[in-house]
Picture 1 (cartoon, rainbow, N blue to C red):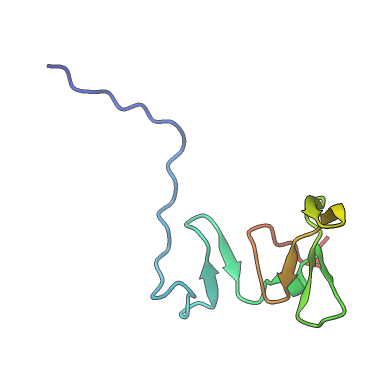
Picture 2: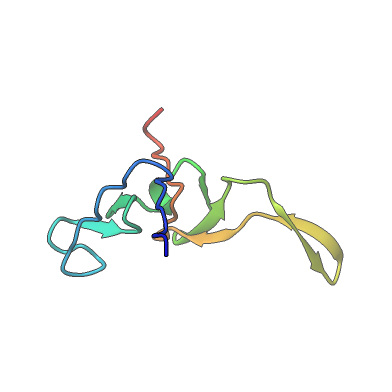
Amino acid sequence: MKKPISIPVGPKKAAPQKTKSPRGERDGTLRKSAATVIELGDNCEKCKFYLPSTLQTEGACRRYPPTPVATMQGITNVFPGMQSVGWCGEFKDKIAN
């Protein structure tokens, strides 16, 4: 019986860093995945795609075009509502170019 041959598909990925908790209490970071590290404080409020509303804790994410939504009055387009302390994997700092 022949042994199966393993063919490498791409470069080896680095092993993920380990932390004591999901919030990364030791080094002040939040682990989203093995490849992505999000600094605590990198939230919607500091993102260039976030548009705050009149409420201080809420706003809209303008990263992508609005989504059509059916309402009683017809179809309207809306941007996703976000809390200022929310975050996602597509954060872009307002200050950075």
